[in-house]
Length: 530
Image (cartoon, rainbow, N blue to C red):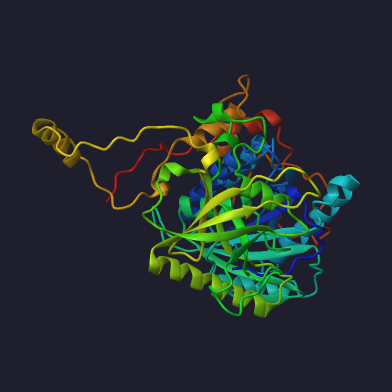
């Protein structure tokens, strides 16, 4: 888990649980491996942005910029707001698809560091052009370098090239190596949750080295981690256990044992998306059907929201019909303000709790303690939660029904002896079904990405590229050059020594041509199991 230091961040606000810092993505192009990576990366980016641009409520992603590095660095998308900008993002992805996939060129050793420096300069200038109120959200930048080259060599190259660069505005610098493995699906944990990191210290900023597989699903999972609240300013939840459960755990004032945890969403609520099957269930609240747990955790700043464990339950002792709402994940906190010894001890006891619950086949019943809102004659309502352990170092949290919410319903016993004829017919039907040992959601595709992409296409817009654009794509290019509809940067670039033989900039793309470049995903269907 990443414990990088953060700089320039202000006090926590409820908005921070949604909005992520601005992101700069630098794609290092290396031939011939780019031919194997290009289509997967572009499809993953299109799928991700169709989702990110569609989410209702406060924007989870603020700014995004994209650079490519071949024999020189080049900005193909200056910093733009992600929300309501799908057409421009899509045009950028289409341009990325058209980069040459064959041939050869001599990469310059300084191109990657120049891309980082230029992107950082663009970000600083963009921040200065923002209004004072809005610029407070854009104080630090996260930079991701995507490469098919050996990751450790890229880290050393960046460490050497950036040693004299002021990286005070860089919140995180990450190198992601795309491996040659080509797995169709995976039911393992997200690469963002279990990174294999080799960190190097650069002027107070860590370089996080991570690997992902060269397939669409793995890349999607990596980009979706950008929607999480990964801030490390403070912990989100305090899980309070009876005092006799453990020893040497940090104790709160009431002598309960406290595990400090971070809270993450497990699933995106369908009510946050337009035109989905659950769209009719959307409430007036733009956050949709977020559970009380997430709302309370996002609003608590002075003191953390508390979950007090009151009972243990047998894992088979609760009916699924009694839980409601979306599940959330608890994990040990990565708050950088805590002492390192406290962080390690907290993590060890959290893992011990997970192991013990699995061994005993127990669940925990916890009561959410309302935040104190000043003196009031009314007793605040409480919410109860079931805490479920998993094989990963996480706990799953779901709201559970209480007496006030229960509706009457008769539950007669099932007859013990159904008719033999009916039993044989039904059993023959069941025997014809294919049996899967587990349900893998990564294999259940619902055509959501193509549906969301189509919602951004204006009815009067052209659905196919113009003849001029088609001719431009078919025109042969020399090695090291590519002709595209280039997006012009909105701020002045970082002054650099011109590189000999640099491809000339093309005029700014028109809005209509941006909408014309639509690359639908390949046909989606529910794949049969092995």
